Image (tube, rainbow, N blue to C red; front, side, top):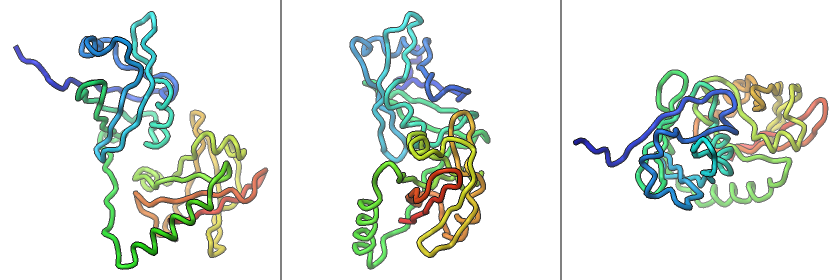
Length: 230
């Protein structure tokens, strides 16, 4: 009889997935030997990055629901309704996760360029910038492939809420050289995002994998965000 040593399952993302996501009940049979007292699951992407997700296994319906840590996974991977995830169980509640978008194509990890001769100086400068740009009015982001493809940039919910950006609002985006672009913030399924930022992205030659920092230098009805490129 065939036995799959690494069983898996897949889940499409539907409205409300950020707060209501669970391992299919039928998959419990692969976890029974490890289920007793288990409180966390580890998710791992192709690049080796991991997320610890708390699970709630005390439900009448016997579903294992993802709790603390799941929202962070969703935000950092910019998951959207229409995406679907493939989970491969490698043992001890560790899952390799593969993300597919609405085109049914797997999202690819960004390719990184080799370091240049002045790499150490660049790293030092970037570290200083990152350390100076902290606090509730700053957020650190990585440009994702779909941020380029669909020309929108998601904002972390907590950052947006604390700076009044979790609603429809128009303002201005600037960079260190004083260049300015229209800033249009919209909200979809409670997720705020910057709409149509292609002009700024192209001017700054931003590509998938590039780290950036958004700094709120003016809030209110006409916010101003400064875009720092690391």
